[in-house]
Each structure stands twice: as structure tokens, then as C-alpha cells.
Amino acid sequence: MFSHTVQLLDVQNRKIIPFLDVNQALCAQTMNIFSTYLVFYPYLDYLCTMRVLIVNTSERTGGAALAANRLMEALNNNGVKAKMLVRDKETEALTVVGLNKGWLSHWHFLKERWAIFAGLHFNKKHLFEVDIANSGFDITGMREFREADIIHLSWINQGMLSLSDIKKILDSGKPVVWTMHDAWPATAICHYPHGCKAFTTTCRRCRLLPGHGGQNDLANRVWNRKKQILDRHHISFVACSRWLEQQAKQSALIAQHSITNIPNPIDIRVFRPMDKQGARQRLGLPEDKRLILFVSQRVTDERKGMSYLMDAMNHLIGEKPDVKDRTAVAILGGHAEDFEGKMPLPVYPLGYVSDEKKIVDVYNAVDVFVLPSLEDNLPNTIMEAMACGIPCVGFKTGGIPEEIDHKKNGYVAEYRHAEDLAHGIQWVLDEADYASLSAQAVKKVATHYSQNSVSLRYIEVYNQALAYKHYSL
Image 1 (spheres, rainbow, N blue to C red):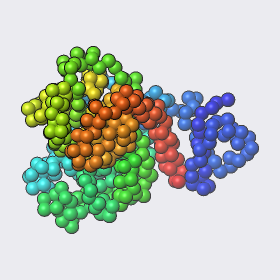
Image 2: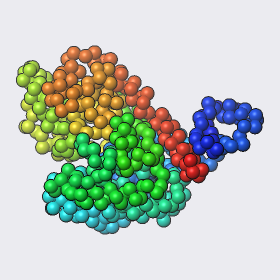
Image 3: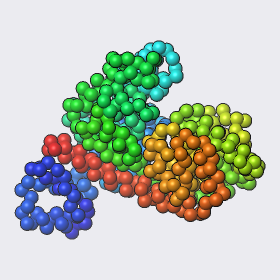
Image 4: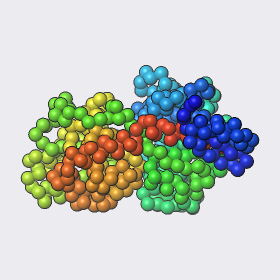
């Protein structure tokens, strides 16, 4: 007999019922109770393998791309045939399909940016905080799309899919799962609302637009277009954190859809504790100092809170001047060199790194990872650092407190409080049981974010999406 988890679809009462295992289901079947039930065996190899197409703008660049790649690998390791469809293909991976449109990709990107630039009265301040999805690719005619059982949208902005393209995907009749890496699917044009609650009713008078927009501004027009499309279809939304799930459930745009939360996966065979001194030697980092790490794709991104780290360092030096002689800051990401000479501590800029082995070395080389984001979903960087046994310090915002358990595997500082951030860094380095923090960090990632656990939760969402689509639950 088999012993895999199964689900029952109660057609009559329009709900899905979990069964303990196949043995139980087969026993129930012999008792003739299946007149109104259909049985789903999601993990049995002898049935047709589910095919999932994950759609993301980039193959490797950005946190969403990394998360999509890791999910694809996890699904393929758990009996699902998963592929990625991307605008920007960067490797030779056979499971990743690139659109390879050359100038057309640039055209879609530039067309949207120009429309936004004009809407901002030609001011660049919020140019990349806004997406309107007015230009993109129709993927519904592609063989990969036709063969897929599930279309899994990931981060699809900046010229990958337009709202019209999303409508065509929904009109195709294929079940759609949409992972929310930020709040854009639940708002009109912004990726993070920064305290704005307009999305709970109707987006208009947008804070990102000149003069805070108006009654029928760009945000309101995009909102109405989104609502017209989404109201006619069912989508299974998956937020990467409980925080974003709660935000999404407040959205007047998508609250009527299925919304759950599943964290991003991580390969704990790759991101794992390694020899610290060896990692420092390979990176050319000092072996006689305690190292604080800051990571961001673009270090100058205000949302990532570098200014608060700088203030925290000044406060730390003011309280404990001797820290300056034995502590330094490593910065990983674009424009890292901009902060040399601007901190009271020595700075080691590592620049933008895409090589995974080198990134693992960076985490293992440091003593504490600090990410003072002002708003964030479930940062991959915190997960990666913790998997390598590095305690983390961050603000109490977004999904960060879901990753960092205060004073168990790191420190959660009061929001926008540079002094408490400094105290958290100092507590990790000088006061806490560092070995215990490190061990608890590794344990947290293995328990909650491993590829196996995350992929099985997604398979359940896929099965439910298929049920909704085929049996109109």
C-alpha cells in the first residue's frame, strides 16, 4: 500500500478535505462513500506529473528571481515538472525559457518607464517605485504555456507582462497561482504602500504622484483596470510572509480571491555554516576584526535603511569608542563603494556579486548581519544569513519579525530606532550566547524554509487551484 498524503474534493459541499493517507482513502472507497467525492493523489509517481510554468521577469537578478529559481528546483525535486519563463535569461539552464526578444524587451521596458516618467511630470524621484503594466509580452501562444497545468506568476513587472497580457492568461482558463513578492498585485501602482491605506478601498490621490495625484489620477486608472480584470476570474495568491498576507486580505482589489502565505525556499545544502577564517581569506577580509554585514541589490535604496545603519554605528562608537578598533563593516551590493569614508568604522565594499559560492562565503565571513529595512516582505538575505549560522538584526516591520525570533536567533529592534539597532548589534557581538544564537538560526531555517517543506505547501495550493478551476468551487 502507498502512504502518501491525499486530498478529497467534496463536490457537493464545495470544499477540499484532507485525508491522512492513501490507505485511509482506499479503505473509505471500499465503504462506498465516494459518490460525491473526487480523490487527488498529488505525490504518486504513477499518475500524470503536474506541469507548472513559473513566470518571472528575470532569471537571476533580484530577490524574486532567486526565490523563483529555488522554488522551481524544489518542485522538480518533489515530482513536479516545473519550468521558468523569463524575459531576461542569464544562464544555459534547460529548465529556464527566455523570451529572447532583444530590442522588443527594451521597448516594453522603456515604454512603461516613459509613461511613468511623464506621469511624474518628468521627475525621477519615484520612477522605480511605480509600475503600471501598460506594456509586455503575450505568452499564451507559447508551447510552454500550452503544456502547463498551472501558470504560476511571480514578479512580472518592468515590461514582462502588461495588464492585457495578464487578462489573456486568465481568459485562457488555466489555473493561476500568483506569488506576491511585494504588495503590487494588491495595490494600483506601488510595490510598498508605506502606511497608505488607500488600497483597502480604492487607490487614488497617490502619494507617489505629483501633488499627491487627484480623484482620477494614474493610480486610480490602473486600479480600475486591474479590478475589471481580476473581478472576473479566480486567482490563488500566495504571500511570502504572514505580514503581506494580512495586507493582501485588506485589499479591495483581491480580498475576494484565495490568499495564503508560504515563505520562499532555500537550499540548506548550499547555504550552511562554513569555516569563518577560510571565508575571510578567500574574500580578502580582515581576520582580526568583528565584521558587520549589510546586503542589498542596490545599497543606495532608501527602503533598505542604510542611513539607519550609519546612525547606529555613530551611536555605537559614541557609547563604546573601543569598538572602532576591533570592528568593521562589509557591504555587499551595487554602489557599496559609495559608503567608503562615510562611516565611523572601516568599510569593505564587496560590490554586486552573483556567484552563489562567493555569496555563501560572504555570509560565513561575518559575525552579524544587519538589515534595517523600512518595509520588506520576507527578505531572502536574512534567510541566507541565518542558514549560514549568522545572527541577524533588523527592524520590527514587515516579515522581518517572522524570520528573526527576538533574542533567540537575533535581535528585532524598534522600528526606525537607530539607537535600539545599535543596542541589538552590540548585544549580539558582546552580550549574547553567540553559539546558541547561531545554532537557533540554522534550526529556524531548516524547520521553516527548506525546499522540501515549501514545495509541498505549494503543491497543495496547486491542487486547490486545479479544483477551483475544474469544479467551480
